Image (cartoon, rainbow, N blue to C red; front, side, top):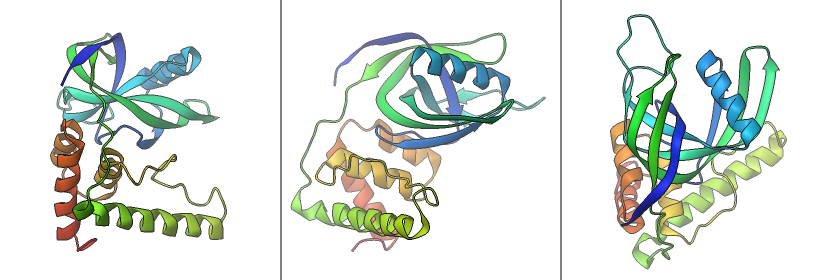
Length: 215
């Protein structure tokens, strides 16, 4: 795997979740450090980095454990933006490129910025026959959710899986299941970091079988 320089002074958003490429991430933002960050990113049409917390909490609290986070994260681009009241933003982001943190700095008002480099994108791989059941089950789930949304109204149900759908691609199918299947945060992070989309899908297939989602 090769990496390449990507961005300097990338603002980071440490969260108790893992963002995958092409993943959909809704956020409600009220902390001053992130209100300012998101406002600047939107104005500049620039991404920010989502990294998974390994200690500390999403919201700063007096006396709380210091924030630390995984060194591999995903760029997020803002695709929906709303400010329903002063001091509150509601946004929806989409994950794009994975990155590796090379150096990070905590600024005066609690915002992390980092020098990062890109992690190679998943190679597009057709799903082999013995793993086709993972794509079939995902397609069935998405169809069910779409039918439910049509019945309840377009805004009544936001789909956790964003278009365009790529049910024939190992990495895309594996990533969507990684977002949907309950699992420990550390495992979700390790799956996101895997270089091989085929290996990721094989591990996901095992998780689905254990959960009784596929056989």
